Amino acid sequence: MPDIGKEKRARVLDPIERVMEVIFGLLMAMTFIGSLSVATAGHEDERAMIVAALGCNLAWGLADAVIYLMRTVIERTRNRTLLASLCSGADAATGQALIANALPPRLAAAANTEVLELLRCRLVEHPAMPLPPRLGLDDFKGALGVFLLVVLATFPVVVPFMLLDQTALAVRVSNVVALGMLFIAGWILARYAGATPWRGGAAMTVLGTALMAAIMALGG
Image (cartoon, rainbow, N blue to C red; front, side):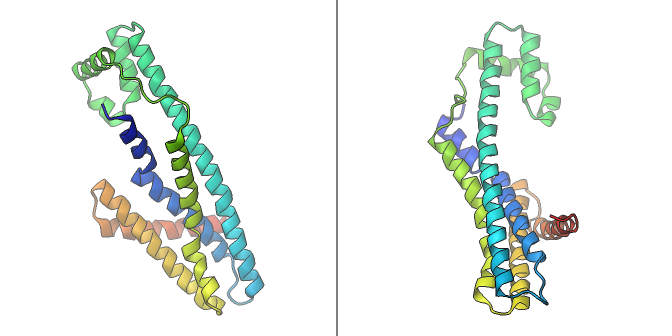
């Protein structure tokens, strides 16, 4: 059984969730930049766009952080309920069904009755209780990390507007930065999944660009 500290760190540092938060924040910021008119925008319009992009990501970062905490409580409560059900005298068939429902679908499909029974016996004989559903310092650190990832994803794409006087050039530089960030995100996810990194980077770049265009077309 992994110790409590390792379980907490795994929750906070999960690569997929963290990269997805960055991609989400980046797409939100880019929708504001994409709405900026290169032909008519002035410094006031750029300033308003930067404030709007930052404010939107602040709001969504806060929402994501709260959802992270809610998910943490729900998952821990579910784990404790599962173990309590197994240790309350449930018969073997019922216990195996509970474990199968808790496993990811592919693992549940691959696990036969013997494997499920082995897991049930191990959990009943060594009932190390899962983390309690109450939130601790590490959980709030994780929520803060989620918040910061969404918010900080805004800055790389708005910095060109702070440094460059020409709006058209700032938009081009911002777009290049956004594409680079999408490529890096795809690269990281592909490596995590064991796929070809450059293909993952290219696919994420294309997908992210298409998503941004769709969001803007829908009035996002």
